[in-house]
Length: 257
Image (cartoon, rainbow, N blue to C red; front, side, top):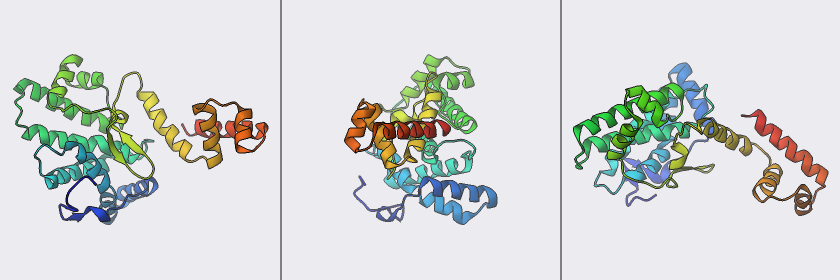
């Protein structure tokens, strides 16, 4: 961790664990079915590393790390309460914008940088509209959708949101666990690629389910551009076996999206 102290808000960060995606979904199902407080507490504790990863983007502004952590947890709880189990979206993917939204709202309200009242009001409405659309559609809305929701011009909404935001790199990581790394660019919506973004998430999950040999074949064929014969020679099987494994892998991926 990038913090000088181990204990944040009374929690020893060195002892935090990360739940697997399957465990998160099972806990969410239990919470929905029974309202189990124990399951909710376990899910919260199993995602505190995600909160810590997100708040790293907001440090260095004179804010107390304990305050940021507690605000991030509020965003996590909102994500738990509103996550739609019928959507094929990773829980951590859904959590990040919810946690980020809570932190941005706090920093906006406490900011010493003076922004015009009209811009602040529009930005506040835009953020509320964004959260409403996230809950409704279970994905990041585009700027056009936010602007339409609040009845403002797209350009005005962009300016309003930029006035309360600090510039960051699109390739800045916001969360990393043993399975995947999530970057800011993974959270950006665009009217032309929302469907492809959702497909990409599904494809990633489908590829993770493939065997090691199938993953290697796809890597050599489509990332390194090798022929089936070249792949066969490299991994020591026949070209026919490569062809069969490649087709099976692609079919399994297609059936999952």
